[in-house]
Image: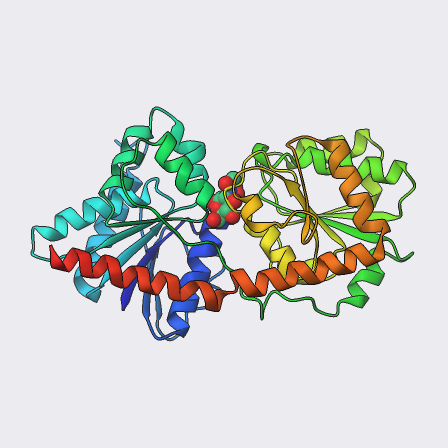
Length: 380
Ligand code: GMT
């Protein structure tokens, strides 16, 4: 199939999933066309059957707010028309689904039928999508898509309940390349960071307020205060980086924390981790936790959103209520001080990543869904 994929190309879960999906589909012989405002950061280099089409935004003096949605729509029309695409798959409803539905309408005037599949990732429904200035457009764009997928059962229900959407939504979970994401021998790296054999706690996010990153530092400070020999690695960057760093200074633990910033490849850092912490207030799936699981790292997360569909409580990690610092501390203390439990959870986390979320198990579900949607559209 010839598939156009649109996503946010910057650091973030939906862009990662869209890019990895495109790469995996290309490896299975599909022709993939990425349509975005910059090269998706995980694309690295263009492969034989992957093409990248850049959307240019006009900076006309009249436009205080350049209408990116329209530039994207025109680019989609162009790529479908000249590359002969079979399907458009957009990730994140705002504004990608709106542009795709508009492009489909423009092309219909020329007798071209292009099915639109929208994948919902989270904040496009749970936070941004709930803003009254977006909600009617988000609901309409989801309803008008020919196919809609959500990355968890939680998000499927949430979309129906909060967006006034009346249609089928297929749940296709996120996935992981367990060949790339596996525990590697990084002993030299571990020795450099932990010269005295300290344990390693890792957090990876885009430091948005809903990630509750200061709570990672609070939890870490409690563990240090109990005398636990542990270091904290913080990966990523974003709006709460400053307050997180400030809290670490106030709590006197800054010297035991490394702020590593945006890092690729994250699997090398996860390879030296003993525990991964994700105290998010909202998470439709928790891709960063799955990346940790694939690298044999037990996770301590909140018990909200799609996380209970990913984490098996007491088996692959522990889940605690939002902002339950005492609960996070207790769970991490157990993992770091009970070697048998840590090893058992590490193995179970890897097994779950392989058995349920491996890329080879999930991509065929997208392929089958594309076929179904295309058949339905062409039969109309
Ligand atoms: O988590 C973020 O802030 C990024 C966001 C995105 O859309 O890029 O992530 C969402 O999509 C990811 C991929 O499907 C999910 O793993 C994340 O759980 C989800 N984030 C939230 O729901 C907050």
